[in-house]
Length: 554
Image (tube, rainbow, N blue to C red; front, side, top):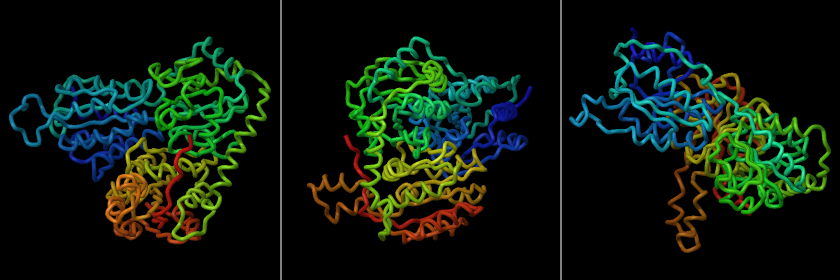
């Protein structure tokens, strides 16, 4: 016999959990039990950032990130799981919930929250009897890491999950094979591998699209080796941006909507697309215009539902990305595909893109150009840095203008939720405390969860946050100008501009280091100082409000 709290703590420890991110009060007795195992219990200022932290932790570690909230905060936690769901990130969420014995009696804060988790989780259950805890936890972890990873949710009876104080005959064994992704690696069908290689051999202008499934499978080295063996240019989704160093001769850049024009142009000249670990969604294909419909395609995905979802396939392989790339390499053997002209054409596109943007990438203009920020971050990010990027303009600038330089650098991006990057970077740092973690966000994104600066200070989570501060959400400029009849008006401008605020001062007030940068020449020394600091740092960079990220090329 043991309490649910004891069983739950033992199981979390057994699955290798080192951090939980939560807003008190939830599973109070479990929190006490977790102390015995040295698990870090990170109290946050909001449920949504707690979920984002768990997400960032999961994406870097490859292990489920854990977040928790009491019943009244459950819907906020569900909202935070949306990005993890869209990015296929394994997060396990615990919430309190109404006990059935109290249902429909007007209990304080009574709402049935469980249905809200259905659309953002792979597994969603409630525990009404303490004996169900071990089974539910095993299934939550199993589902989170299997196939296409994703969030799961367990609701504990009691607004704070007080069922954990009850005793039962509990068996807290864990299935350690489901403690990280991928738990299993399905092998590709040999006939499918042969068919794919045959198409690749016959193509004159093939392109590989490396998606987030490549990074989840940890298949970057196999991807690069295959591209080199077969002389194929590589473009990436935003989720797959760190699967090939941006400085590699075969790397063309991120493709689709938040992209590099060179990548879109190369893709639309291809006669064969090879999608590896990519769902071929609207962001990666710029609403299925890049590549154009009808192009011959190969697709490799661990989820059979993804195969042929948006493009007709010449070859479909339902398997683990790393196993498939390794099988293609083995079958290919040594060869000279003779694609020098195609590679030279792709290289010219990259060089042309760089020349087109050189003036802004190297700009000494004041206010500072965001392109210059991206160039300096490319040069100064340590070889093992983890860079965490917001969506919106931050995602557009970094997706196109920033390059990873080494295979040891990581790049995490928001799947569409502004404000995600800063809390996610704190989770990433908890997962990789010995690696430099750099967050890139705008002032619009930073405002969402700025209170978590205090969280970082309180728990000693020493990240560097670079804020592209143009006192606006100027990505909305074009849309509002269009709404106002095609011209900018003072009232229309008020809808996307903010107060000019010094974030460095705000950070200092919360106990962090703040550095304000107003001239381009200050960028490098500020970043160097921030990376050397042993505390949370906010680098507030004052940038040009008129600078708009380039629109995608079709």
